[in-house]
Every structure is written in structure tokens, then in C-alpha cells.
Length: 607
Image (cartoon, rainbow, N blue to C red; front, top):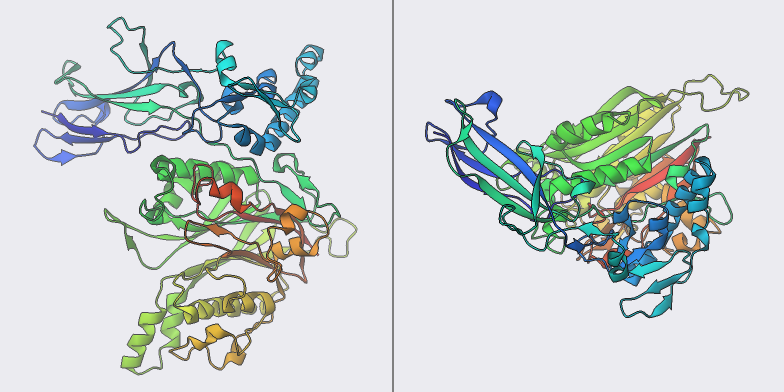
């Protein structure tokens, strides 16, 4: 007989849009145990597992903050209410929370007004005065305080609740047959369930029972587990594109951006592989926000929101590439190329491996060629002539399993225009995506890996007149030897990091150079006159972002997008985040941002 031994959920807090997959331990009729699903269509010895999901309804009313969903809401944006936006987006836990999110609210209100103008005079009357509402916060004590620069009213949640605009949610769970006024609604059949916006604010119940297939009757009482209230996924304020060619540094919402002829966008993002997302390292991040079930959906939402033409992703776990990133991004028009590292990592329960993934829009580019760079193979070649004892020590230091992925793409459209001398010319683009070794003690290995990659790119450049991009996580701060090699084409022989060279692989130091005219894309912020806020987020010494990686113990830049300045020009850059906004959650990853790195994005124009 089939029996259920144990049932539990990996996270107590369910999030709208993130799949719930309970752990169910079963004993088969042959007494073996399994966690595999046994549906009715694949009954074992006449028994199967029946699973149901239920949502509880109640007259009790609560609401949660749209930005910090683990916090109760105390304020509601009246502009969102008047605009008939989803009510979940209108709630905030404090006046500061609302003030920090105001720019996002203003954008939503403007879109609502634009939609109203398209839909006729009746809705114009409803939406048309959103930009004239009062700028005040009504606190729970009834006091009024101004919110500088805002244009929408905010009402205390106690007032909003009295007007019936919040979520319905139970105070506790009771037996629906006991007369407590609570009712269960079936919302799913199957072992897994993805909560919807209709579930927000409600408790869910998972129920499973072993069933005799001959009569459809359960062989034992059902096993059940209850969740806490479903919360909406956090919605951080969208990052905008900042034009580097306008005196004011004009900001453009990515959703409103139109692609100009001869331009394209490139995203570089270390997405933090699940095999490295350990609770002991990131114990400041809530467990539900650190879970892969949540992070993968949040990462996908973020990446799709950037609408990049090319995505260079690092720390993409191989199984997640195959089962999630590749199929999900394919739905949105992306083709994929992947190169995994050369050694697996034991996670405590299984072996896993990550790597670099490059995606590109099929309607904008086609793949001409790809090159896979395994630094381990380069190390084998480098040490081939060494005597065995020396070779063993050298390989022990150099074999670190890092890789790079180089793709040559061809633009599908005529990027130079009909009257240009280059009209009709085949436009190629070379994109290198890499993740350099992380150990700060192995400075020689980092320099050697970057130098090896650049020498390979030089060979490609010598064979064709082709613009180049070099993007990724270089695990090297501005001013380090690898960064100097990339940004200035050489490493000064007196650089202190060159003192770490036990194998002599960096000598003579004069060989640490390259001929590619590489420039860091984000240095354009330092050269422009406007966008004071963005220039404050750039280090004046290196002209690089103050940080691209933000954890509790480290803050600094490790990620870059370099381009060949003789063939490409920067048009705009994705705005940088400020440290203060991230430190409210201690560091990254957080419920809002699901990696310990931030995404970089640049728009380029062919020259």
C-alpha cells in the first residue's frame, strides 16, 4: 500500500508568481521510499497520490507593503486607487517607503492617464486630474506632513480599510465546517502550485492523500500543510536609461524607449548561481527571497524589463540554463549559447556546475560563430614544457575551471542607413562573456586569465574588421592589474600585484599588453556634464561605478562592459543604484534584487 510519511514546504512565505513545490516523502507498496510524484496516470501497484491546493477566504482585512512584502502596510497611494491600478501596488509600510517609490508611482499614474485619453471622455473624467491631487501623507495619528516632489495623496491604511480597498485575509485557520465563517476554495490540482494575485493576502492549504485506484478512496486521512499569507512579489523602482550625449543626461524609461537604427543594447549580469546562494553567507536575506523558486522569477522579470538585445550572464547553473533560462527567454525571442565551467561543485546534496550564457534577440542578430575558452586547456599548454614536479605545482595553481564564451553575431538589419558608404555591408559584432577567478590571493591567475582572453580576441580582430565587446564578472576592482590591462592596454611593470608571480608566468612584464582599443562603457558617466546623480555614483579616480557587487562584507566594482572605441560609441547607460537604497535590506541579494551583483547595461551605436 502507498503511504505518505512526511509533508512540508521549503518556505513558509508564498510569493505571487513563484511556484510552490512541497516536499512529500512516500513509502511505496514495495516498502521503498521516494519523493517522486505518483499521479493517477502513473499509479504504482494500484495506488496513486492525489494532491489539492485550497485558498481560505475570511472577512478579516490586512494588507502588505508593495515594496517590502514582509512588512504590514500603513499607507495607501490614492493616485493608484483613482487610476484603478492593482490595489497591491498602492500599499506602503512607511512615508519613507512611499517617498522612495514616488518616481515609480508617477510613471504608473502617467501611463494610466495616457490609457484614459485613448479610451474616451468618460475615463478622461475619471483619470484626468491625477496630477493635481494633494501632496501629503495622512498618518495614523491624523497629522499631515509634506512629501517633497510628490503629486499624489497618501491615506492611512486604517482609513483605506474602512473604505473596503484592502486584501481579505484570515486571522487564523479554522475548520470550514465548524461555523467559523471561513471557506476553502480549491485553486489547484497537482503537487505544485503557483500563487496568483488573487491569492495575495490569503492562506493556502496543501492536501495530499494516498488513493486506492480501484475505488478512488483515500487509504488514510489526508496530510495537510498550511502556508502563511501569500505576499506580492516586491516591485523595485525600475532603473532608467541615461543618455550620455545630452547636456542634462536625459533619463528614459526603458518601456517608453524606441530603438534607433544602428544601435543595440548589451546587458551584463552575474545572476548568483543557486549553488553559491547559501544562507550562512547571505543570512541577512530572508530565506524565501534567497530560494531559487523566488529568485529565478525575480531575475527573469528584471532581465526582461531591460529589453536588451544581447544578454551576457554569469553564474548560470547548467540545469537552470536548460530547464529555466533557455526555454523562458526563448519565449521572448532570444537564442542562447552556453559554456559551462570544467568542474562540478558539491552542494551538500548533489553536484552542480555553473557557466556563462549569452542570449541574443533572433530578430536582431544571427549567430555566425562561437569560440569556447577553457582556461584549464590554456594552462595545460602553458605548462607542457615544464619538468613533472614543477608542472604539478603549476597546474595546481592555474587549474581553476573558469571559462569565457565568445560569439560572433551578424546584425540582421542595415545598421548604416541607405545613403551610407557602408550601406549593404555585412555588420558583424564580437561579444566576449567571461567570469574570471575569484580568489583574491591568486592575483597572477587573474591577470593570466584576462591576458589569455585578450590575446584570443586579438587573433579574431586580426582576421576581420569587427567591433568588439568584452563583458562579465572579472572579480577585479578598478586599479587592479587585470583592470589596468583591460582599460589601458598594458600593466606597468611596477604594479604591486605583479609581485605575486610564483610560477613566473607573467614575465617579462612587457608582454602584458594588447592592441584592442578598449574603453569601459560606464566611464562615459564621468565624462558627461549632466546627470549629477549618476556621476556621484562613479569613482573619480578610476571612472568606474563605485560598486557593482554589494554584500555585507564587500562593496566594490567587479563587473564591466568594455568596447572597442574605434568602431562603437556609447549612447546611453542603465542608471546605477545608490548604496543607501540597498543597505535598507543590509546588502544584496535582497527581496527586491535577487543577485549580489547589479546588472549593467549599455546602448551602443555602430561607428
